[in-house]
Image 1 (tube, helix red, strand yellow):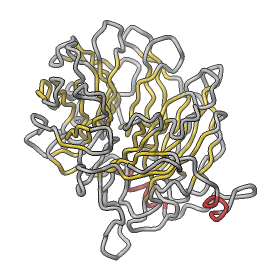
Image 2: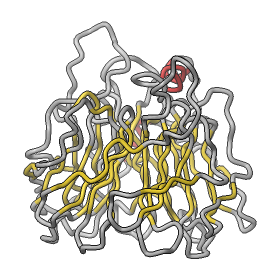
Image 3: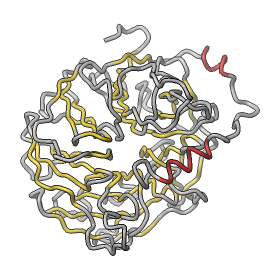
Image 4: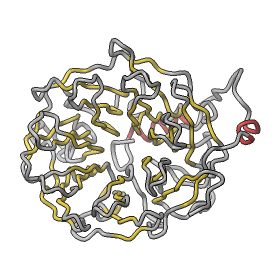
Length: 433
């Protein structure tokens, strides 16, 4: 989904998605059977105070920025003025706290992450912008912000004539201490031809040293995640890279080695977007789910030799492709579940939705159609996040929606008004918030 404003990969995939065939088959439940299966959790909208318009091209970030014990939310809009933050009250209501976050120029959307960048005990905010690069904001623990890095980019990469801004954008990033020096670092997936780069910090938030030894220096990455994939206590990189999902292991000396055996390399690049990482089948090894724009969410289990095995189609009912995916325990049973954004049928119009797939702890999932999440009525939704927002030990769901990528020839009036959405999950016998 990255090249120009929305990306060649995005547009190519949307074209292919229109001809995607049904992937059902023997043993697959019908829609009626699925809808009659009771859901152990129900969704209630918890979006009071959040925007009802805009194009939210990011996975919402859930962090307690002001230390009051309640989850707060940050997101980055496309065609906006920079990131925005809302402080939560633990019940699903939000109030904005974005003073100091504006760029002074148009934002294009991208990923966000948080960490204590300067060691003062307060969460800070790091932002990837598709057009403008990396921004770092120091938080004061009350919801106030100070920009200390603006438009960080891999400026030393060669630039072809006529493509002077080729490397300025960053699609997504993650914060972790990659070299073990005690200071948070940043891994960033570039837009266009920026590759994947790691910026090593010195604890100030203002000074960054770029190194990409062993990482790709070209193409783009829609999502990047930092996780200890091989259990050596060093954060590694899992990415939805343009050629396909990829993994790089951290050597501990600011260099990397690829560990992507058996991961796909489709002919069309940019098919993959969201990434969710965790031990899906409880074997002690890190696995991941990723969103395929054509085929829906895909689950890859890590094997004992570090290779990857793709699970059979976990969501055959989704024939229109997935634009975002996340892992988390939604129903509190100790198994990781999937929340996928996408569309059930490859038709145009405001037909996107958000879908719950409950995991059984083995790598298998079942679609729950009656969780009260919207199965249609949304614009394209690239961002999905799972977090316990109200402290009831159930995973709640936040999504960034609003991208306009298709038209049905009719007025685009979504069924769900809000474009930055949060649903609190509850047991069927619990009162709605």
